[in-house]
Image 1 (cartoon, rainbow, N blue to C red):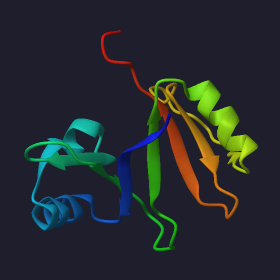
Image 2: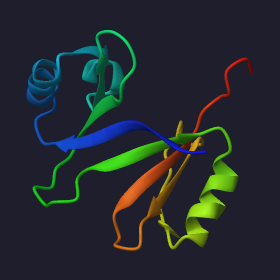
Image 3: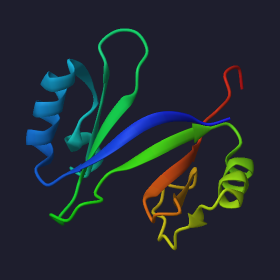
Image 4: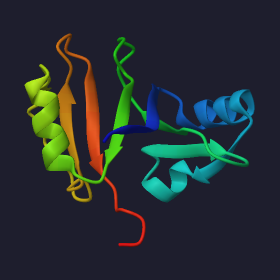
Amino acid sequence: MLKIGCIVWGVMDLNRGMEFWEKALDYKVLATPSENADKWGMLGPKEGDGFLFSLTRVTSPKARRHHIDLFTDDRPAEVERLIGLGATEVDWTYQPGEEDLTVLADPDGNRFCVVQVQQEGK
């Protein structure tokens, strides 16, 4: 089963984006850009459940700078299922620390990530 885990939003000015979206959504900072080599930051609800909102630094002013991370406890099965529905695996150069994700594209070419998460109690 999949669920949306995090919306990832591309911005050219990461600090300005973090400040804007923190206030716009009334979220709190969960990870600062400075903790992540100034490449990304993450916001989340101040209380209760809700989507995580991550901002990543981009250099291109072109559209399609955003993607969705889908969380699952069985990434291989979900990747196979999604490919069966028409998704394609993206030729992606994975960086250290990205061993838990697979980059796919929907039939229209929009990219999204399938991220392995631990099951509760494991």
